[in-house]
Structure formats: C-alpha cells, structure tokens
Length: 380
Image 1 (cartoon, one colour):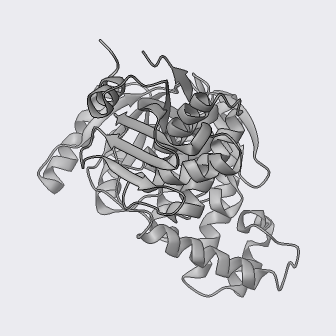
Image 2 (cartoon, helix red, strand yellow):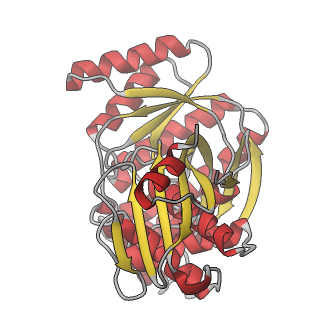
C-alpha cells in the first residue's frame, strides 16, 4: 500500500510523485515566547508527522491538495499568494527560488497528508513548510542542509504568510534527533542536543488558535516596544532576552504595564530555559518539572497567553502529583504537556476528570517521545 500522500497525489494528478519527504510536529519543553526575543528554547520533535509528495507542474504553477479537503489550490505562485494553507507552500516556493533550489520552470504539484493537529500548538505549520521544502528540494536535486531547509521554511512563514514567529519550530522540525531535546539559542542559532528520556504526556484541550491574527503578533509588538525603551539604558541591546537578569529592578522601573510584565516574563523564561537544559542533561527531572510549573505561571500571569482549559490541565496535573506541567506552543488554547514520573495512569485520570467536570468533554491525551526530524521518504 502506498503512503496516503502518494495515493492522494496519484488520485488528484493522475501520475506518480517524483519525490517525498516528511517532518514532525513538536512540543516545547520550556522557553515560551523567548524565540522571537533572541533567547533559548528547548523543544522536542514528536512522532506525529506531515508528509509531502511532489512532482513537476507547468512552469510557474503551484498545484496543491491536502487530505484535509478544500479542493486543489492552483496558483501562479510568483504573482499570487493563495488564501489558507496554500500560502505556506507558495512561500516555500518563493524562498527555494531565491536559493536556486527549484526544479526547472518552477512548476510543482504537492499532495499533503498530516497527523499533526492544526492549531493545537504542535507546530503544524512548520511541519508543513519543512516537509514541502525538503521534498521540493529533493525533486530539484538541490543539496540543502537541515539549517538551510529550516531557514527556507521560517522565511516562508514569516515573510510571506505574515506569522511573526521565531525560528524554533522550523529548526526542531529540520534538526531533531531521536531521544533528545534541542537547546536552541535563537539569536546565535547555536544548537546543542540534550538527552531526554523522561515520560511526557500531551493533553490537547481542543481549543484552537490562529497565530497570524491572534495574540502572538500583539505580544511581539509589545516586546519590541520594551527593547526600544530599554535601549535608552543599554544602547547595545538588540534582543529582549539579552537584558541582564540582575538588572530586573531597573527594567521594572523603566517600563510601564503591560509591556513591563511581558519583559519580566521573557527575562525570567530565558534563565529558566538555560537552567532547565542543564538539569535535564544531569537527569534531574524533579527540579526540571518545578521549572515547568514556574514557566506556566509566568505565561498565565505575566504574558497572559494561557487559557482556562490549559490552566485546568496544569492545576489538575499538579494536584495529582505530576513532576511538572505547562502550556506549550504559544498558548491561547492548544495543548499542555505533563512530565510524569510514577503514577502516569492516575495522573491522566485526574486530569481527564477535572477537564470533564469543567467543560463536559474529554481532552485528547497521548504519550510523547522525542522523535527524529525531517527526512526524505520513498516516493513510490
């Protein structure tokens, strides 16, 4: 049996694809809203993946189909950016064109299937852009590195679709290593693989967000306003995450609310993430879990990016004896992660009971393991 994306390509376009690739979703263990502020993040890739099968099309034409429905997107991608998910692939084509990594004529057909939930904070958009970038580069015979693929995918999302994201999602999708978290310093793009073999549970609240039109762009603007004001005190400041933690009182005096609260979160989360990577590398899961709880509270109170459903999950996990829990993937809905030691079944049952009592429905819950990054797949 061919992969569903290959079957979808054949059914839609009446021919076999010439190349294919896949890329994972991710959860961020800690480091929320530090990425676009030049700070560290600590994500892992998950087993859920997006699969892209590709082949040539008429010169300059993008034809794309998804198992999520909506028919075939047909657009001259150099002139027009389609609405919806097709915009991400058109952005990828524009960036691959700039890198001279397109097949002759620049016409591409794409079929996409995915088991990464959309809008759950698991980076379905990066899984889409990284998988399609890798598949199209393979079709073109272009030898792009993982970092180059991540860069293409990042610029497609930020510069063309207009999501003011950081580089974390595309980097982990491209560079993830099985059994490891990735400590990524977003200002320097320095990466370090951190062993991660803890038991982690993902709780999808079913509440969805749209980052391009939601709170993410607003928060990013607030952080930029903080940097602009703080440059008066520290002219060489480029990234909010670079503000010295020992100067926190000075930061609080300089800024007014709500910008002050946003900045305090970023500086604190930067310190928590670097310390957390150190704890993980030493196998100190209980101490790491305590940082996760701290991170969630900072997201809830200072960055105001949580949601009642996420708070319900985290509070229930803490009461049931989980080592740690926090929202993941920007917030405003989506998913929470729970670090479990012993008693995983009891903890999951307690979370489910609390959620049903509050919202009348069960959340989706599944175990998560640190998985591998993007890879070329067989096209036939």
